[in-house]
Figure 1 (cartoon, helix red, strand yellow):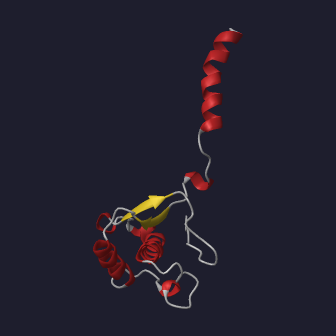
Figure 2 (cartoon, rainbow, N blue to C red):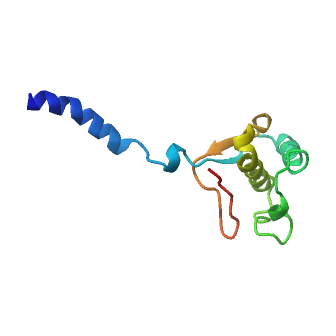
Figure 3 (spheres, rainbow, N blue to C red):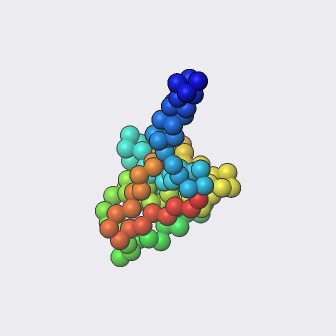
Length: 118
C-alpha cells in the first residue's frame, strides 16, 4: 500500500517543485518591440502608441530617463509597454500589427524603469 501511494504522490510532488510560482497566479509580462519588425512598421506603431493609443511617452523624450539608448527599437519598446500596462486589463494587447511581443524578462535598464501592473 505504501509503495502504490508513493507512485501516486511522487509525480505530484515533482510537478509542484518544477512549475513556476507567481504572485496572484499571473506571470509578469512586459511588451517590447519584435526584433524582426521593419523600421517603418516600428515607426508607425510607435506613432500610434504615443498618439491615439494613449501611451505615456514622456520618458523617451530627450533628457528623460528612457531616452538612451536613442534607438527606434528601444523607444518603441518603452511606448508599447506603456500602452500594454495601461490597457491590458481593459482589452488592450501587445500586438501593434505584429510589431511587438511579450516577454517575462523585465526590460528595465539603468535609470529607465518599465512599468508592470498586475
